[in-house]
Amino acid sequence: MTPLRYLFFLVLLVPTRSMAQTDPSTLLTLDEFYLLVQNHHPMAKQANLMTQKGALTVSQARGAFDPKLMSDFDKKTFDGKNYYDTWDTYVKIPTLLNVDFKVGYERNSGINLNPENSVPTDGLYYAGISVPVGQGLIYNQSNIQLKKSKFEQESIQNQARKVLNNLYLDANYAYWWWYENYQKREAVNANLQLIQVRFEGIRQGVYNGDKAAIDSTEMLIQVQQWHNNLNEAELNLQNSLLLLQNFVWSDSISLHALIPRHDTTTQNENLDSYLDWAIANHPDLKNLSIESNILELDRKMSASQVLPDFTVDYNVLLAGQETESPLFSNNYKMGFQFAFPLLTRKERSKLKIVKIKQQEYDWKIKQKNREIMNKIQQSYNKVYTLQDMIEQQLAMQINYESMLIAEQSKFDNGESSVFLLNSRENKKLQGEIKLIELQAKYNRAIAELKWATGKLNEEVQELIP
Image 1 (tube, one colour):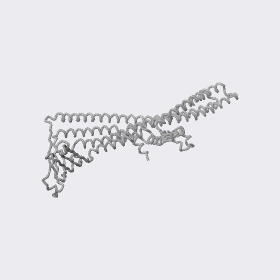
Image 2 (cartoon, helix red, strand yellow):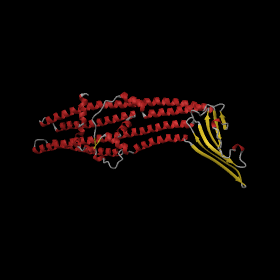
Image 3 (cartoon, helix red, strand yellow):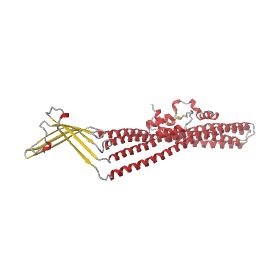
């Protein structure tokens, strides 16, 4: 660590020097503020609901494979005669391969019963299977929809992460604006007290005849000027507290009683680690990848529809009093259905459209990847530049302090004027405020870097106990 960087860390402590005698319960760190946002903000609760909705989407798609109990009953009576009673009750069990199993019981009677519905007196049990040999065996609407629902769940989770990522960036801005205005108010107020002490000393010197009256006027202007600066700092602090309240939805927390605490520890940011993380985990890139995977499912579905629609049905029949094993019985019912469009123009065109969409998404992914990488690079450059600016501002601040001390010494010896002393004082105060602004910008830039990478939300989630 360079000497300037070490001094930078020491200077970070200067605006918060009064906190050493402050009740720790009144201090609010950024991490603690994030947790308040996570626990109380409506958008955070909305993100949790989005995650629940994603899980229900998969459950809904699984419902297509739930067994179904079905019953068909028809009865006709006319002129006191029972024409027919038909009753067919069965359980149908769908599967992922679109092979449907069916187990049921059929009982029919009547003087005008259709002969094909004739069954033994005790009824007829049956167990069957329906197999789509061609179209729909591997890829069909139900299992494709289930796979899509899993991708949709992941997409919704990514959307929730993106919502939280944006929320925490806005919260970060609000926190550091509050921190900046609080530290400015503290700095202006502390320095105003020193200026007032100097003003009283000079005014006393005028009364004693040691100082010129114009020196008292010059010093009074300085006091008035920094009184106005203090009023402006108080106004900005109050406004920043109002913005902060937009993120803390809890009536039990009084922000006016809290003090922002800045953690002076930092770490060297590694650009490559941010780039690698974003490639693998950025919500926007993951969503585009998910949409590409959904298109691949559409392509497989479209390719399967080019095949003939050929379904085979087979049912084993067993009478109520039959004792022979159905596996060795000649009692069965079977059939098949076949359909195939001669030109398949609809199916082939749909397949080509899906392939074109896949190419479009490949280009979208490449474009978004470049945009994200450049955004991360820009954010990293901002962090790096602000670090250098803070070090330079710190060096300037040390020089301002030295020049003010020297000017004060000359003034005490009668070799300088109040005007020059105030000028040195103003430069020192402006430099202190500039340093506070740079510190706030630096911390906001760190959040922007994490936001651009998509990991700001991930780091906040790690704070949750």
